[in-house]
Amino acid sequence: MQSAPLGESLFMALLFSMIRIPDPIRDNHQQDRRLRLAIARLVLRFREYGNVRFSDEQGLNDQLYIHLAQALNRSVFAIGIDNTLPEEFSRLYPRLVRTTREAIHGFEAEYDVQFSEEEIGLVAVIFGAWLMQEKDLHEKQIILLTGSNEQLEAHIEQQLRELTLLPLNVKHMPMQDFQKEGAPRGVTLIITPYTTPLPLFSPPLIHADLALTSHQQQQIRKILES
Image: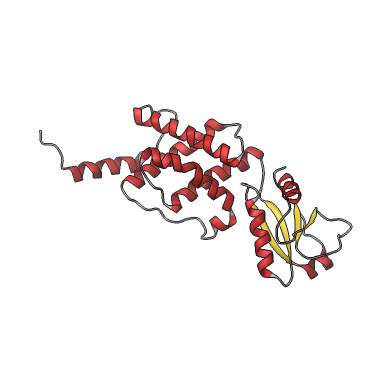
């Protein structure tokens, strides 16, 4: 019996891998067990780098198994994916993306692959969603009171986003509007580089200079992650 040409064999392997959905419960070949162990190490690194814990780590591992089994096939066959994430994803969630990228280096080295930024972004989304699910949280609503110094305001916002792995919803509000109307409902925190009197009823308000102090960082992190 004549064997199929190498190109045809690779195509059939690719076709099978694309139509088959990985099953973290039933898959039990040697390469499947190897992948599960590699994912366990990936999650461990993420926990260490991000200083977080997962109560249902097995559920997270299963979710990552389904995604990374397919991501490895895409990488081996150089198949790109549509960039479904917003272009600003890395800017909006810098610590989450950076922690994911650092944690996945060992996984890439083990499989001798280099994932695209799109693939890493999707892994970051899985970690981020699991963190939100763990804490039964929604995006924290933060108001940044704005004035005349856009560069300073942008710097403060970026510092906020570096403080936590959790997604933040930072909305800009002109100082004059805040002084007239107060804070909208559902706001967790107000931060501003400008001096302003505190209304009678208001969420916590932090006055920030160019760099947040260590005490301010601790306060903000406690508010955001509670």
